[in-house]
Image: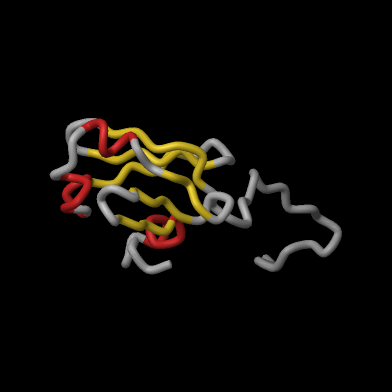
Amino acid sequence: MSTSLNPSSKITRGHLPTSALAKSVTFNDALMHVTLMDGRVIGVPVAWFPLLRDATADQRRNYQICGGGISLHWEELDEDISIAGLMAGGDAKSL
């Protein structure tokens, strides 16, 4: 029995995104939801971002998507978050 692939077989995969770009941001009591251009939604705890956690709903809604979707910016709060950092689950503030 061979476990190698038959060279003539074709592997079919679902959509494999090559980048993650932000489309919009919403909040509930516990999470920040970042909707990406390809339809995925990332939910991260607002507690990870003390400036956003302590902000008013109006301040949270006043954001900009920068670099064509690679980062989020809240001018009034001086908060910047990279989408790559959110996707990696690591240092979300590194741009």
